[in-house]
Every structure is written in C-alpha cells, then in structure tokens.
Length: 294
Image 1 (cartoon, one colour):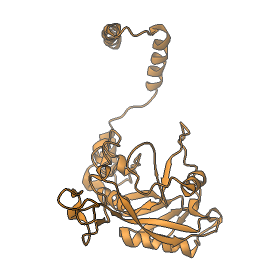
Image 2: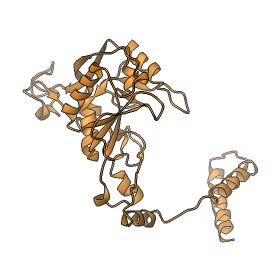
Image 3: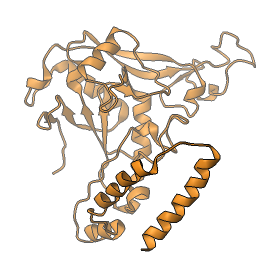
C-alpha cells in the first residue's frame, strides 16, 4: 500500500540516522507495538471539525470549549520561558478549533482559592512553610501521574487580573474553597513591590529601573503582572482575612461570612462576578452563588 511504502522509506532514513550515532535498538520489539497503536487510531471517527462546529453554530447550538493548563503557561502571554507549546487562553479556542472570534459568548474563568504551580517558573506568593504544606495536603496537590508535589501559595490578584484580561473572562468560578477551611488567617496578594531608583538599596541611575515607570507614588508598587516578572525579585503586599473552621463540604447553599468577605473582596478587585464556588471534589459540591445564566 501507499502507507507501507512511505513507512518503509522513513524506516530506512531513520536507520541511517541511528547508525550515525551508533544507537542500539530492537525494531522487532517496538514495531509491533507501534502498529497496534495505528489500529487503535483507526477506530476513531475523524471528522472535519471546522465544518462540524460551523454547522453547530448555524443550528444555534451551544458549543463548550474546555481549555487545559493555566493562563501563565500560554506560549505567547505566559511567564516565558516557563510555558507550554500552545495557547492556553480563550483565544486558543479560535486558533485550535477554528471557532470564529465573533462566536465567543460567555468566558468562564476557573481559578483556585489559592495558587499552585507545577515545575519551575516565577511564583511570587509561594509558601515554603507549614502553611504551604497544609494547602498541599488539604488540596491533594500532587501530580496525578508522577505524584510530584505541587508548589502552593496564597492567591495572587495581579496574576489573576492578568489572566482575566487576556481571555476576556465574563465570570469566575472559584475552585477548592474548602481547602482553606481551618486556617486562622488567609492572605491575598494585592500588589507587588519592585525595586526602583528611589527605593533600591543602591539608588542612583544604576539602580534597578526597568520597571520604575510602572511604580505607584515612587514606591515601586504595582497591581498587575509585569512582562519581565522573571527578571526582578519581588516583595509582596498582602491583605489578610479571618479564616473559618466550618467544613464547607457539608454545606448546601450557605457559606461562612468570612468566606463571603473573601469572595466579595476578590470580586471588587477583579471586577468580574464569581458565580460559582466549589466546596468539595464531587461535581455536586458546587454552590451557585449569584447571577448564573440558564
């Protein structure tokens, strides 16, 4: 067949490459596994996805596109070079699925009540202490495949504002609010403080000035994610909230006043409504807070 001819040609080319590096391999061991995989792929019904979605829109059907990975891993707008290979923001539905931009309606932003990060990269609010360990254990923050512990920290509003802005988020859903139960104090990052010529220990024209025009009142305070966050050490400005002891997983629709204060503050700062709260791992453990469209 035509496929077999192309396959044999590629095998020949790769054998030549492997011979250059004296690489040892057993084609007889791996080839059957590969062909078994090909047979599995043949079972899928491949369609023209662009046409399929276009017909769905024409028929007034609702299309839900679910993203993967966090906004700061986006290939274009993430914390480069600590990013993935594709678009993880709302625009990825257009570039990855062929959805026309003018067909995008509601944009639901999913965020945790605290922050996590997998692997390397900037994490201004990271907690390398007992509180970070508490969040990791209570939230089961371990890689599903590798079991590797995730980095944990307080909620970062400058980063959340950035994620909301670049995706045009219209409503937010807070996940894992129950993980914060039991903490006496809960903190939220409201600003970063960076070095500027006026607050740098060295001062003068040779101080750290790359971000100085963005500071507030000459103090180097900013409330948004800087493009060169990977290049500058930051100190964090926090706002503290009283914690709660209630087991949120047992709640129906009522949430503690302390959590309500926490949510209201986030809404005020982000300027996007938080319409749903997750208080447990079961899909039924969702509190529809307000303004949830039908």
